[in-house]
Image (cartoon, rainbow, N blue to C red; front, side, top):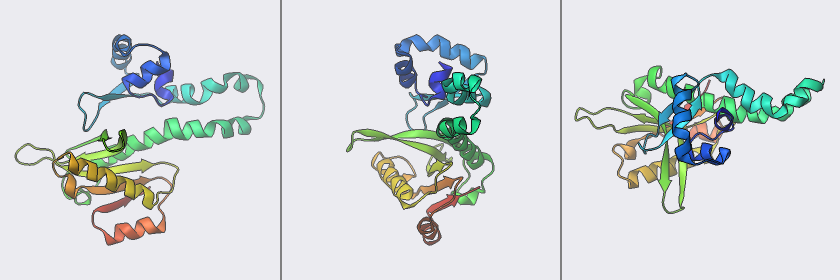
Length: 222
């Protein structure tokens, strides 16, 4: 089950498919792993009946995502640089990418200046947005909620996080499309939500220009 999560299967259905089991069979094992502090679960920002599971210990993620697939090679080969080149994609995609997303959510919730999002971030989560026209679902790495006096939680911002990818206008266009979907769903505050691009590799000049010209576009680098 840990191998399934480390491979990028973070929903109950994805884990079940990876293991060729029924989703109902996973309730007890997932609870045991969570109680032991090996995994954590996060609620979907927009679909409260959906949760994602994450490995809490980075060394376990590294073992299952990087070491286990090449274990026999690690035992017998001397060409460790070649093995690393073969494994670097899994390391970036299955370990560093998700970790960077969580760091971005943590920074947004507890360290970012409130004026960056127009108000104080009361809650920061990841989520999924349904796209009925294209019959698909889009993942959102960072969803920032505020808190109104009447108890409602307006959407202050949505963001995308890329660890080893220079972000370009296409990433901003995707966020604009997601904001349109949220507005169509009637999400409170979505029409004024800011669009945040987080990157560990930098931003294309065109994207930086957009951020300078538009108050609703924010870029956050290392």
